[in-house]
Image (cartoon, rainbow, N blue to C red; front, side, top):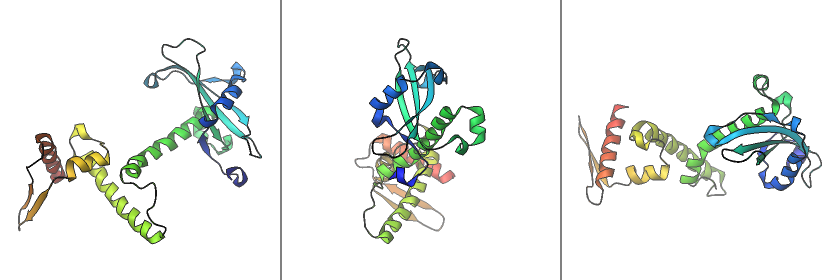
Amino acid sequence: MTDALHWDFIVCANQQRDVLRRLAEEQSEWAWGETGGDARRGRRTSQVCCSTHRPEGWNHPVTIVARRWIEEGRRDGAWRYSFLATRIEPGAVPKSLLERHRYPSAIWMLYGTKQGRENHYKTPLCDFGLHHPPSCRLGVNQALYAIATAAVNVAMVMRYRVVAREERGIAFWRLRDRYFRIAGRVAETARRLTVRLSGANVDALRQVLWRKAFAAAGRL
């Protein structure tokens, strides 16, 4: 379907790793461009290159952007590979990005940016069960996702502005378990708000975390 619609895309192609690795190994050494090592990923050297490939059942070829690297402690020539498939032409890549990097590296950077943004959605999608809409009725799903959006915004404030520093960025399910699932009662008078929490079956660590969080929320 994607082939027929002529969409622009960047997708991981590692499911075709065996075929694409053979294609990559056929490339001349001059076709590979150095991108340097990456200590964070444990790579002492890395290279990228482009080729074309027509997936089985497709009418037109796509651009395959390959990356190969050697990990720290591995011998020379012990390459590992990863592959992207794309229909984005060099003219569609931001000019400033192409000026700083070659086309293959630019495609990997665009893919990394897309992947990074997707990662921001993974936690709420998984922890709130939002991957699959619960109803075939649009209105029901719209209401659910509107409530979920509000919950995500509240949770984000809690995760990064309210909880203790060592708890920053915790998963939503952990936030719910440690900070919300405590029986309590709120009493409000004209000048004072009192929150009384259950002390039974609440361990000392959770009590300390909750008090710190409540104090931080009061300072926002």
